[in-house]
Length: 133
Image 1 (cartoon, one colour):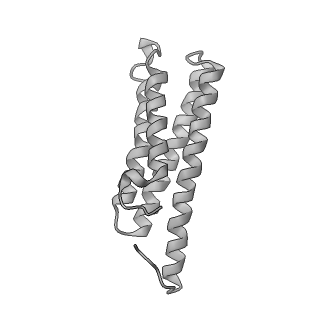
Image 2 (tube, rainbow, N blue to C red):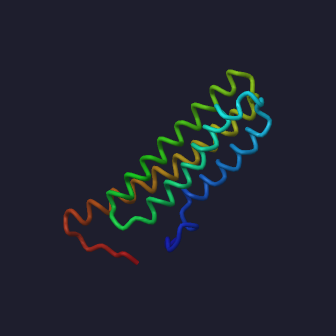
Image 3 (spheres, rainbow, N blue to C red):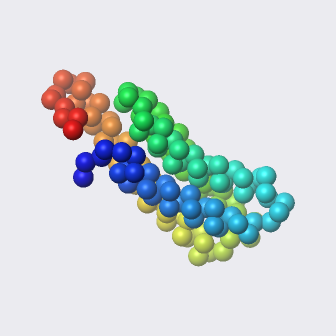
């Protein structure tokens, strides 16, 4: 599949699914968590998709990787926040397992994107012919 626009990126598509899941799962968090874990988790989830988009929009491969790396950090924050939310009793086992599964799907797609950029960088470094179409 040829990647022509942001919407073609599977990593971004999965990040959107994760963000939607985060918003739905945090809807019923206690009011006391409105500006704590709820806000942070939502910001981190948005950060995954946003940084993938930012990286995709950059014209230099090192910049692509920098933003994809930030997205990976945000992904870890979401995962950690949901373990803490589970420990606090805000979500149940099934909800935790569902969100962890979606983080792993997103991570796999994001890692694939990172690996593709690194492969392209190596091809350029060794002056191999690169097809940008």
